[in-house]
Every structure is written in C-alpha cells, then in structure tokens.
Image (cartoon, rainbow, N blue to C red; front, side, top):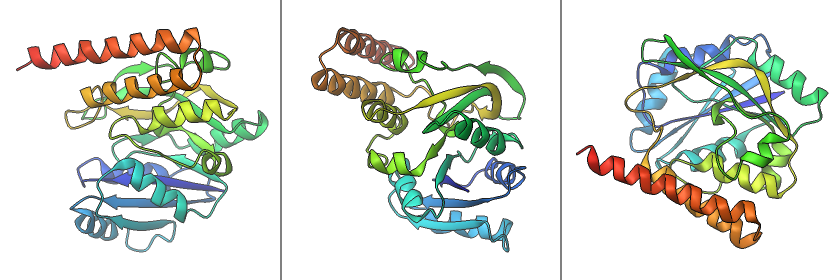
Length: 253
C-alpha cells in the first residue's frame, strides 16, 4: 500500500487537477497526505477541504514552516504504509502510474523507482519530454546531474527512514537525498515510460540560482567523504554551473 506525500505552499489553479490525478489512479490502495505549509497553510487547508470534503483517502496536515523538505518529513512521519510516492501540486500523474511503478519496484527488488516525464505548459499542452538515466547509469551520472524527477519517485519507506528522510535545501532537497541514498547502497531505476506530466510555469522553481549553489555544496561534501576522481570533477562541474547561472541572472536585470 502507498502513502502519497504532497506539500502545498500556495493554492493555485493547478492544485485541483493534480489531486484529482492521484484520486483517479487505477491502483486504489493508497492514502494521500497533503502538508499545507507556510504562512497561508490554513487557507490552503480550507480550500482543499472545500473541494474534497468527504474523501477518506485525503489527510491534511499543516505547518507554518514554508519549506518543502520539512513538509515532506511531516508527511512521511504521519504515513501509514510501506511505500512513499511523491507528487507535486502542479503536475499530473497518469492513471496507471502507481500500479506500474509498484509492479516494477517489486519485480526488480528496488528501493526507489522513477520514470520519464512529459513537460507541459501552463495550459497543459505537451511542450517536450525528459528522459532520465536507467540502471547502472544512474550511479555513474548522479555526481554530475540529477537523475530523477523528484515528483515521479516511489520509494520504500524503510529505506527512506534508513537515510533519515529529507535533510535540507530550498530547491534541491531531492538531490541531497539521492546522494545520501547512493552512499547507503540503494537499489534503484527509472522506468522507460512516461507516467507523469511535469508543469513548467513562471512561478515554478526550475533553474533557480540557490538550487545550483546548494548542489555545489552537496558535491563538495561527497568529495570530502570519498575523495574519488569522479567527485573531484563533479565539484568543478557543479560550481561552474552555479557561476554560469549567476552570470545569467545578473545579465537579466
């Protein structure tokens, strides 16, 4: 059985469709834990309750701390089931996502499974696709890039607790988690199938400078813990990305 964790910092026009895409899953044995967080948490809670007043699958928690990693840990701690699925409040899960991911995870004895994604715009139109590394390529490439779409992953709760859940980061809590999971000997994969529509819009957090800066710090940590050539190269690649992003941000003013 699956516990779906969604953090919501603000209620916008995408939230309802995102929640509906979870409630319409072909796999029915799940609970949906929504953690409304930040200064508007009570308003978010009320809005969701008004849209889905009597659905026993939905559990709403609140926190005044507006940080996704904190909200996810609250949801994980409150979860009742052995698998944790991530979902963001502006994306769309395909109806068979949970069934296919759970079958794949169990069949291949994995701790984590993700998938490829469609990129959609504010109107829900497909504007591209994003494919992710598969199999052994994940561990090889993780030092240099994020190898999972965070909102697509299904994870064994036991392994998530083994690495002590989410740690920190305003824009890169997922990448920190993957690095710690790799050190803990995780078994993982991405399915060669698109099971989620990932929304690109102006208020989303893709590509923010803070995220690049955080990632550079994580890779430096990995190098200090394991002084490998790969980690050494990764430090310079990720710092380079952060500096390039900083230059682009300055030039946009």
